[in-house]
Length: 264
Image 1: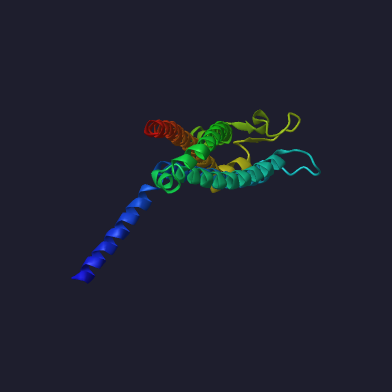
Image 2: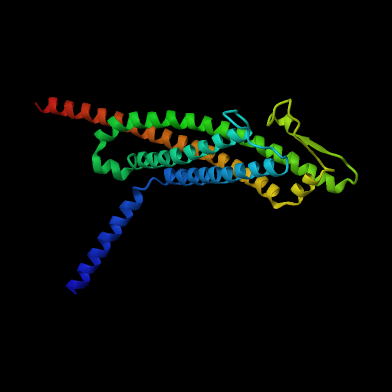
């Protein structure tokens, strides 16, 4: 009988401990972090592969070659974009962890653990700093989303030309890279529907794969923007909570002083 009661108390204690741990999880920050990691992973992974596919398309079908020396050509720009992608992946992996830690420190379980005073003194500055940084990152991701839409538009035009060339017999449609600023005005890198390279490019799976990779990368950038907006809402709520906690702490200090003066 006593053993059953001890087992029941142990199970009850474990259950209460689990409930307390689950109550201390910042679910809003967790959801925003998952969305941020998913968006950054899609943007970085698909964007990197799409850039590699673009290099192959330019070299194979448009017969472009890397410029010798330190000349800034389209291939050098693509390499720079790849390094930027590496930096974005690393930076936002760390930033997501920091935001999750900030979320944990503003939950009820952490408040009960450390007390009101430490939460209010440190939390207000940390929350304000994260709000400012997240707002700037949101603007940056809006710019990244707008920039990512450019290759989607270019590949959509190329895909449309391939589609129209099969629907309209005898149509001679051309795509000139100069109109997109990929090459200089003096270079003529044009591909037309009557050329063999154009037919091979439209029949290959590389064009469709690169086009859809850029679309997924664009969707990933949009998801990162949504995650930043979600973070802003969470951080604003945390800021309001910390601010109210600070006011409550000051109010309790004033009341305790008044009671002490009345007692003395």
